Image (tube, rainbow, N blue to C red):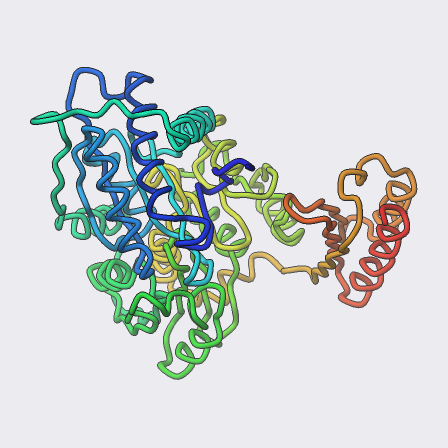
Length: 452
């Protein structure tokens, strides 16, 4: 079988790919691996377990909690809270392990398991590999060494989790949001209570949509992957801005007062300038992926802010930030990491900081976001090709070089082999949409002929 752990934990169709048996087995394996690594040495271990509102999260949570307790780990069950809330509480409560059950922006039938290490940080790859190995070993019959009597784990609900997390969010804001009317789209997801409460405590007048999860409607036509409802609501209510989260609220996209989208690149640009003013942008550097719009890079250069690029994926952004000590990074999709206040992307925190900048400056979000101009971007997926030969093809290399020469400094080309499918993604940016489309189509034809 392939590796269970992907770039964001274990994920699949609940009760088909991701079963109760798997959740229980992985939880016991995680407890044993962390014990072997010395994480539990000298004290009774504790885990924080949270989930999003998916119906499948109910039985997966039961299995996960049962597995941890059977392995001698005390469990604090925090219920439905965002992924970054579970990460924060893992650190704030001094827990040895955090577990979030969510498939983020995926459709309702999916679910996932994400582990956090002590401090609320992502579990190291080598520990994930070890957990998977131990899980496989015992799944095929090897018995577990289980505690008995007083050695079994105890389980209790930690109902203070929401207040603890909201207090943290509001406490790190540089200023209040009084006078702002803000529409929040919670995607019928994990932040349906947290986000409205945090914005209200910070002083905003809050209008909400997507705050009635029923276990089945998460991400269904709403949230950060479907902005239509939010755009209409912002205009209808005359709001200063709108904020949209995904199912587990680790990402944030925005809408200005006219109903226009403000994407992750623009949010990063606004926050970078705000943080530099407060001397909080360490090394005057922001980290983002190669998929960030060229307009973001040009804007940062113009403003004297250094731009460090990584591979696609917020995990790579986070790795670069932690290694170099940078304070701000993120993705076009809305994963924004403010490392001084969060160990992972935090959509509610991002939205609060964005709104705080609007309140502080008295300038509309539309004006603040205009610090960067989004260059037209064309993306073409070329299927049924040998994605492993992208780097080796001389014909393709020559075509890319010619395209880059044509585009000059106001355009760029990016070819990305898919990590899971036999296809290559061709992305072209240019000052003119027709030129971007023409170059992208020409390169797509070369990919077909060279790699087909």
